[in-house]
Image 1 (cartoon, rainbow, N blue to C red):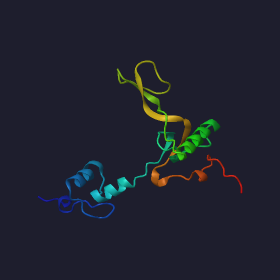
Image 2 (cartoon, rainbow, N blue to C red):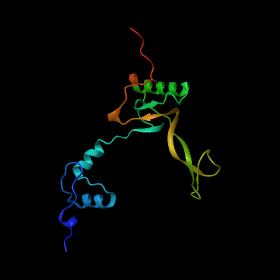
Image 3 (cartoon, rainbow, N blue to C red):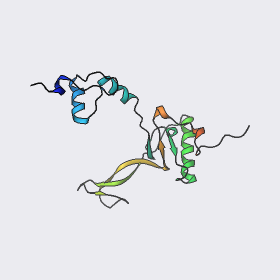
Image 4 (cartoon, rainbow, N blue to C red):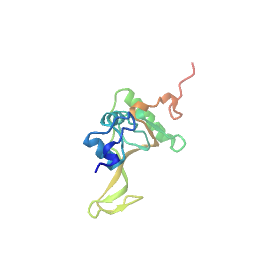
Length: 155
């Protein structure tokens, strides 16, 4: 017996093409993602990876510290890193580990301060810039437009 779903395959939510490949049909069933492979590849290529939190490395010009939350020293450290990146000095220190913490022997998870024992921090970040927004390349901020950036001298 043929069911309605067998007779009419799901359609791509973006281009309305019928989903016909095994991958497309499995994604529709498993994840509720009704996208054809072409639309999924385009979405992945254009995906925004913006986030809020600590800076996670790479180009510091893609990070904007939160000027309401951070200290002047944290903002100055970020500005110095941006200026160094502009000059071509793209070396960066190793990121710091921070919690939650996982005990490597027992698997126990601890929040807050680093507990004693053989533990590893789940998150790795540069805390010296404080908290802020990290933008993907397509949404790269203009440093001149951020309040944390140094002001241009008046002409």
